[in-house]
Image (cartoon, rainbow, N blue to C red; front, side, top):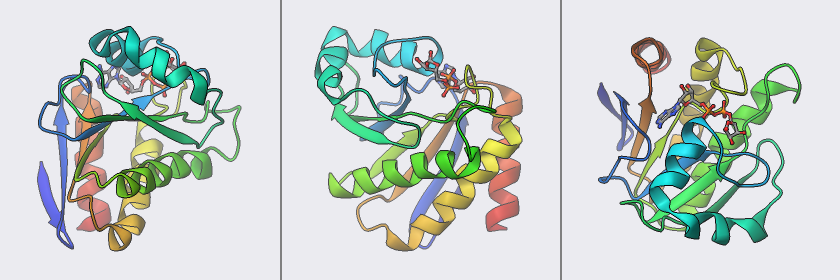
Amino acid sequence: MKMTVSGVTLECLKGNIAAQPDMTAIVNAANAQLQTGGGVAGAIHRAAGPGLEEEARPLAPIRPGEAVITGAHRLPNRQVIHCLGPVYGRDKPEAALLARCYSNALDLAERHRIDSIAFPALSTGVFGYPIEEAAEVAIRTIREKIPTLRSVQRIRFVLFADNDLEVHEKALSRIFG
Ligand code: AR6
């Protein structure tokens, strides 16, 4: 699915966040220590190689809602933006913290003149955020940010499961429809 809103292209597809060679930056669903882990962080660190963890280490720890940027090492991108999403039921208020992840990631992308950025569904795996609620927060935050974007022209959601893709497509249609 693809749509253009005020000159910004929004896309949703099923795939692996670590295999998006046509995007300048990808976003990592990080842990506070910016170390490799399971899910998205595991896939990104495996593909990037050990240099990513070495570069990220001095930037840790980060708090829920925060984002930091590094190079992409062996990944086919220019940069990785690492976001720490909230743990659902623990880091409160969850929605505000999740919104800050998307907002901070887009601010960093702008500062680094990034034209395209791919997001996974932050917090919806190990951190337990229900996918429908998370999609709503992510897409509403992006809608609020679009008028401020100058560099970013393409935003992609990369979802791992058919259901997650469907939820994001529906939320995009509802929120921008
Ligand atoms: N590409 C795209 N999406 C993926 C991929 C992938 N390769 N792998 C999983 N997903 P998670 P979180 C989906 O757990 O909830 C880590 O261990 C997954 O199905 O990666 O923010 C870190 O070290 C889910 O919908 O991130 C942290 O400790 C979504 O991506 C913690 O988990 C996010 O799942 C972060 O938890």
